[in-house]
Length: 208
Image (cartoon, rainbow, N blue to C red; front, side):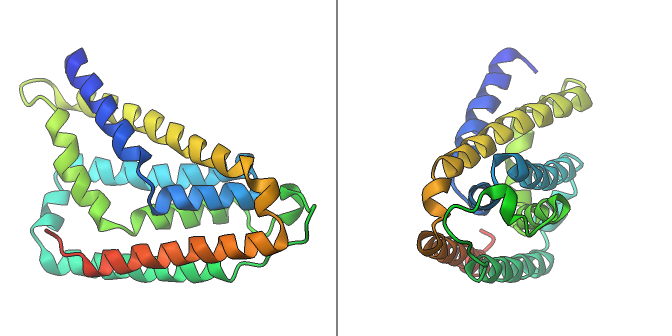
C-alpha cells in the first residue's frame, strides 16, 4: 500500500465516520447522561463491533451475506427490532433533578454501556455490506494483504474514535442544559424517536 492510497482511505473514512447515525447518536446520548469518561465504554463497544465486521469482510464472509437475501433480511429485521427496543429504552429513560451530576446518576455499569453500544453497531447488516464494498478498494492484490488489512483497521479505529470523541464532547458541552429535567425528557424522546426512525429505514430499505 502506497501513501497516496492510505491518504485516500483516511479521507474517505473521515467523511463516512462523520455522518450521524445510530452509533454517533448513542455516544452523544451516553455522554449527556453519564459524562465523557463513562461514554468511552460505549465508544469501545461500537468500535469493537465495527472492527469485527471489517475483519469479516476482509475474510470474504461478507460476500455470503451480500448474496443471500434471506440471511440479509433476517439480520436486517433483527437489527431493526433491536433499535426499536433501544429507542423505547431511551424514550422512557428516567430523568433526574436539576443539579445532579453525571457521577450521581450512574444507573448502568460500564459493561452495560459497552454491551448496548456493541449491539447497536452490530445490529445493522448494512455496515457489513458497506465494509465488503469499501475495504477491498484500498487493498492491493499484488502485495501481502495481512499487513495492509492491519494498517487499514488501525487507521479506521483512530478516525472512528476521533469522531466518537467529537460527538461525546459536543454532548458534554450541552450536558448542563440537557440535564434539566424538562429538557432531558424531551432530549430522550427525540433521540429515542431517532433510533426508531433508523429502525424503520433499516426495515424498509432493500439490500440494493
